[in-house]
Length: 113
Image (cartoon, rainbow, N blue to C red; front, side, top):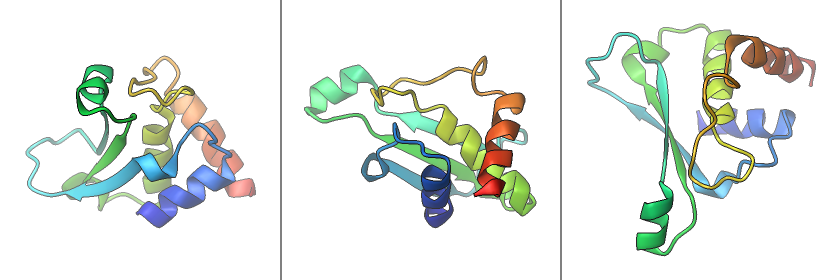
């Protein structure tokens, strides 16, 4: 999926996303039924303690993600990447911005390119 994530970042000009500091992982064995993917960030206090910059991990819950259509997989990756803020500081954009309307708009843009 990291190649698809790379393609999304390039096509949508997500210049705020430093691909060297974002990793995409598949997890197995989750008991959650409703969660398809999660975005995890290295908090500011952890960055300071570790003397490092922000880092994000996108976790794809295999049991739920693998069942999706290709369109829904791309939309899910777009959704998770949208949680990464412009300043790439370790925080998150909330669901008032990361919503179906905005994800669908970016997906349509992705298809055009």
